[in-house]
Length: 184
Image 1 (cartoon, rainbow, N blue to C red):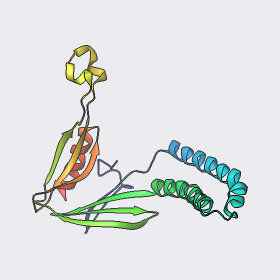
Image 2 (image 1 turned 90 degrees about the vertical axis):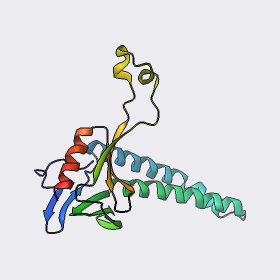
Image 3 (image 1 turned 120 degrees about the horizontal axis):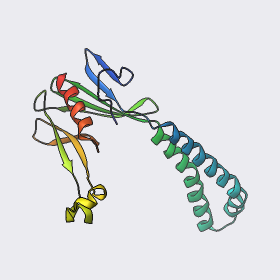
Image 4 (image 1 turned 180 degrees about the horizontal axis):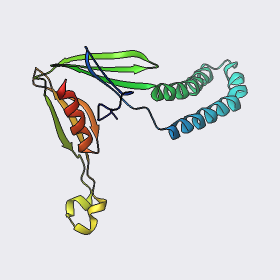
């Protein structure tokens, strides 16, 4: 999720480079989930360490491959989870130039520059790939159970292609982001 107003000074930077929107991190409860995941995986690693060493010391190649695969899993699961928690996305916009930067551990990993059709070249589209039974029947009694889909904010590039900038279940939030980006 991205900030929707200029008052959110910790998530929006406005300078000579234009406007930069910084994605929000995960809520505090997710950090509790991360610690639980890390504790469980660490306990699993300790529990299988002895048998894995014995299995690796056998002469069978298949056993060695299985031990290496299990060790890689025990190492990669917490590492990839931690990388996910420290992921940030930045959207920088100035005039008809849009830059999307992806960072992990505060280091830029991937950045793309996109020339836009115009300064206000943004469009919000509704997306729903699978309406459920409540949506198909259009029964007022089932209104609360309908699959409502979500909205996507696209930028129109100079070559005519659409670039997905953000998505949300709330159209109003995307409208505010669209107005912010169109302003600079």
